[in-house]
Length: 459
Image (cartoon, rainbow, N blue to C red; front, top):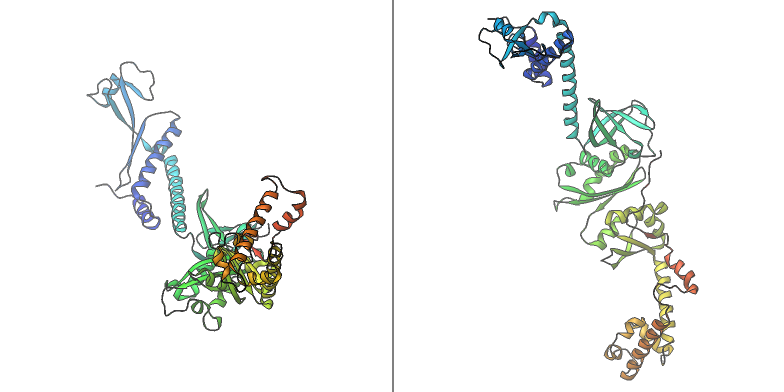
């Protein structure tokens, strides 16, 4: 029995340590032997190499076809020559001619070594890729390694990740060697290992920090429903409890802020508003404007998701926030368009509407100041509403008889008809109304769109 080669224990060790099968390496060495022979002989031949998996003994054979007339001696042999090797050789048969491997063993050994090293590297890269692909969306710790064109290269232990400018928080500054928590955003295959994209600005980072710091969130007793951020400045986190005995906001804040404080510190002082999620839009919108206290929420259009919010005069600036930040985040969190007014603004707007209604009603034929006042107080201050009313609707009002009611309704209908006839055709604007149209399109600073442009980090 042939003695076992020293190569086999080495390959078995590689298989245990690196997860590369011994048989795969042996097949690659066989290919290396074939390649080495072709380089050594300088000929394009049909060579077959075999390695004994127990002894690592290498055997090589040239495969040639038996022909009557040889035209290419690299792959063909005549019948007479073939019979010297194999007595029963026949035409068109392939025969195997033993090759002495010692002549090119040094080249084969060097090639095999390179092949093994390359295979180990490829396997390690693939293992790293698969390992980090399972960590997409996971919070990890890392160390700032170096800077490349404003991008941060972060040492993650087994591999390096890149924190590009677009995923950085513009107010954050890091030093080489500084530790930080970071979100693995995406992992792709690179030329020299996995390409790992990191983020410090993604909302999921905040959610992962809460899962790390708050046991109830990790155990799913408290659920983080939504996170919206203006990274480095403020974020709002909507939470709900899956256990009626657990207060979701209190669980996340902790005793004297003991749970939320480490998260704020990790985010370098970014303010965090914890909001109790609710299926009631009015209640949810009011809570989303925290820390401002809301007096009233008026759902003006459920279909368009438009709501009007009333706060006290001293709460207006707090509800809107610096540069509209608080109201903007509340709109993004709830998905509603929010229009915020103070009590004074609401009263002024109501007075303006009442004055406009009074003026419009006073122009109706046979309607005096007292009747105008009665109609407005009774909720009939709109010409459109009056034109669709029935006499019985108005006769319930004090001082309005049936004939007066019919006369008011008819007058409202005639006024609206005259206005419609006087209006310019569709598609043609009246030059005199240009200024009014422009004013109507102006958006006040308290009107908040649902999805504003986000702050972008410095480049």
